[in-house]
Image 1 (cartoon, rainbow, N blue to C red):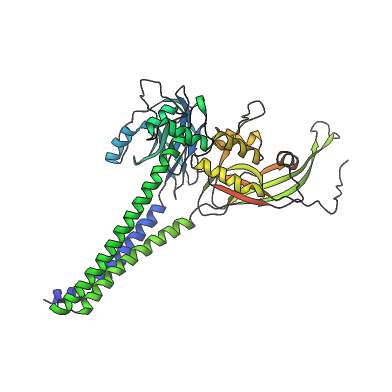
Image 2 (tube, rainbow, N blue to C red):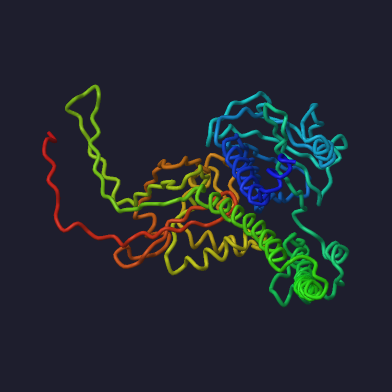
Amino acid sequence: MNLYWEVSSYDLMSYIIPLITVIIAAVTYFNTKHANLSIVVNASKSIQFSKFIKVLVPEEGKVTLNIWCNNVGGRTGTFKFMGVVSWKEIKKINATHRVNELPQKLGNYTECNFDWQSLQTGEKEKDNVVTLDLTSQNDAIELNSYVYALYTDSEKIPYFYPIYLAPLTYSLKELADKSKYSEETITKYLKSKNKYIGKKGYSPEILEELNGMDFSAERIEKMKKRKIILIALGSGVIGSLFVIFLFNKTQGMGSMADWVGGLATSFALIFAYAEIKISREQFKKEHQPKLMVYTGWKDSLFLKKNKIKSYDRKLDLPGVQLHIIPVNKGLATGIYRYLGICRRKDLNEVSSLIKKAQNNNIDIEGIDRLANLICYDPADVGQNDKNYDGTGMSLLYPDNNELFQTIESSHVGKIINKKQEDIVNKLGINVYKDVLEVIYIDPNMNIYPFEVKTYKKPKSTVEISGIE
């Protein structure tokens, strides 16, 4: 009797809420201390989205993928590349949430490492090169389908990244078959948008644009229905509480204090959950990479000495250069790529074109326009004077993954120097008046512009002594 009285005298709800809060906080804390894998896939003709990559497959049916990973977790982890697999293999793995056996791989593998690798926080592995042949009968890979880059860790937990294989072009008949519009309607629409290509075919972006018109209307209709449902549920809850209140007054089912206490407890649980969610989002927001780029104009002079002939010395005058220093001031490791330099007045147009590329809605003319607005050299897109892409396609879709640099928290990235003469010749600017912008992007094609102040000629010269 005494035991029952002692337990029943406590307000159990006052213990449940703090207990739930502590459990959720503990789970959130330990999750940040685990190793975690970020998979990056790149191809020569591809479009990067937030949760997958679309690879455009040419007519010959072969495409080469560069795949690598980064450890973005809070401690060192051991990972292994398992290959590129079909959705059927992923379905088997998801059934057990473990990679218990070797999956059936797709494609041909060159320069690949299938050994276990220990990666520290922020460390990047070497890229794996995989070639997919959609004409091969062995793999039976189809267009307009997903394959997956698969990794696993020491606990056999799977990590995979979706790769959508899309055809490079569609015929007019294929567009009509894959959309609900007739060939005549599609032709009129494309001519009105100046997107008529003729016999060369039509890009996948046009099909998505055609299908997207209905999708937008359907999404608006769904939002209207959800709003009606939420209003109906809210009205029902308020009406039910009002009915309960009246019934309580007439039938005497508990005191008003009991009902108020019960409702207050329910709302307290809701607010506790909301507070935990907000705190977690705030923690995630604070523990993100934050790129800052510092720039300045410099005029260097180098003295080169001949090791054999001590009296033989030469002066090297590279001229005025733009000095670029990227720094990650965030609390997490970030991956970035130097894109180039543009005029400030062209920044909005550059941002718009990159946004179109991010949304898979840029054409050849847009890429050519972007290449003319940005000052970059062959080394910035992983090429040289002997092997140079004149179309500007490599500016957005480079083949060399080494162009992306991993910058750890509170670390400096690769320092870059660009000749003032090259910038003036490409952009046709006056460095004393025109404001420039240095542009970086991340693997998701998010743009990071940073202002470059105008050049000011030194008011005085410096005498250098000690040169014989």
